[in-house]
Image (cartoon, rainbow over all chains, first blue to last red; front, side, top):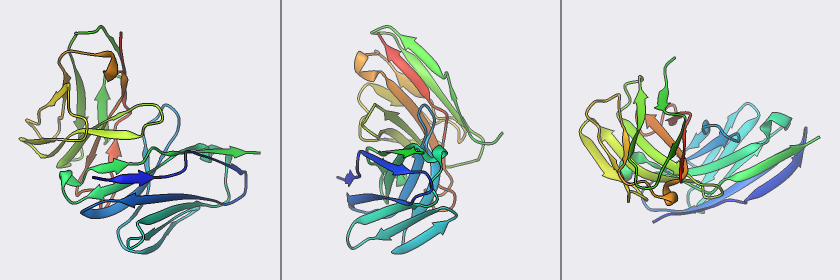
Length: 111
Length: 114
């Protein structure tokens, strides 16, 4: 089975940096994904890590440590539009590479 | 526009009724998935398919059925609707298990069973 944990809620200030952590336990690990989901909308792809280290894409970066079962999503220069739910998901080699999601972290960006 | 199309967007069912949630993708993706999302619970995998004619159960398959007769279509069938099936349903697809471009999600179907 799998267990994916991430904080339920976070609050940060516009222009600041926020780090959202995710820990996981799984067999057949095939990669870790981060998705953004605004209320009432579908999840949208942010990043993918399969090897240890940092992946940077503009204001968003994601880090993975496979030995520790740990990832984080780093959001820089926060904007009001970044207020959303951030979903950590693990892909497994079996189950057709289906994603197993954490419960999501609701991020509120305040002025 | 290329992507994953889900219909309907909203539906209200009475207990015991049946319906099919439609999902179509035009990206020639082999892998397709159905998820349900309940408030505060994250997305749960219902069924998945790795290609036409091949389907398998996910984490929460009870009360649902699927078929995959073509690469493009992956409908989800609810036979006897129950209040516990009130949820938002998302269909997703990927070309290669998400390695290149992640998984593409449809806009969702919001289902209420009363």
